[in-house]
Length: 399
Image 1: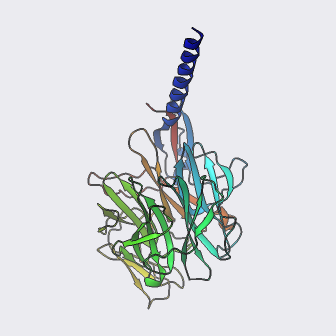
Image 2: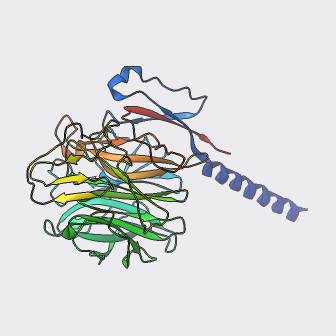
Image 3: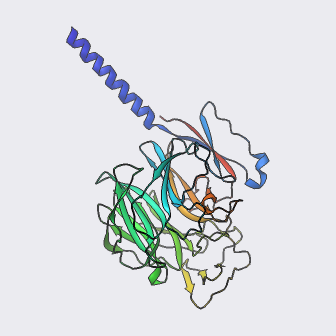
């Protein structure tokens, strides 16, 4: 009898634990409400929550951590690991950005209340560091940090570091990944549904060409298998998958430019392509602009989106040339597309840095723009994003 009671007690405890874990695992995004544009902030109503926990995604004020400090994490990514969100980025502080920058990570249970977790890569060679991206490797069960660094401008390299936890500290495993094309500029990793890793990147030495490259199973090196060139003169490329389509998003060169950058959309049925694009496949472009446009910045050469979607680099031009009406809809340069778990299909959030947006002029205080969930047409194309000042997420248990 005693043995039976002990066994029953263990079973009840096991069921309770399993049920609680299942409840936690189902604590996903339930309702998304989009506010008015930030030019009409007074008309932003709080949504009806029906008892759910509601948080605000605010694009018109700096994000702060739980201590009240402005979050200093730029040109990085937002990931969801083990029921918690992690925001990775470059910390610029009061510098001009061309220094031995640190990488930081913040965590949050709800995308609003952020805790500073520390510096990602405390031990690193001297250089200039940008664009940290962390992914989880299901084969090795380790977290992998890809980053872009320059021992000397503009001698770009891609480095890789690993950690047992999403907050690190990360230790360098490969400081100079031998990608197929040298002079690595902006780049970011992508993990497919089957656990295969890829890296989409710009090759500075090859005219700022953008390609996708397959990684080794441990994500620490390249296999040498690459896509064709997606674009020339491109920057800030990111990649994600929705259903059976692979998306590559990138824009013309826009190094900390205050006007922001348009974003061209490339689509493929395979992670290594071939990728296709059209002039109207753009998400951060004024809706009335469907023709090829030109965007530049001072002392940088012009870049043009051609009718095929290719970005062409013109080295003979060395002055600012901005075509009339060609400014991007949102003055920001993309950094990531975050995949947010929801009841049903995941939500994809476009993230971008609004350079020189902070009132105090401190680079580390620049705002980030987080779009409401991207919308897609029936054939899979991404609809243009909207400039929304605030929008809301209501959290609650799923089923």
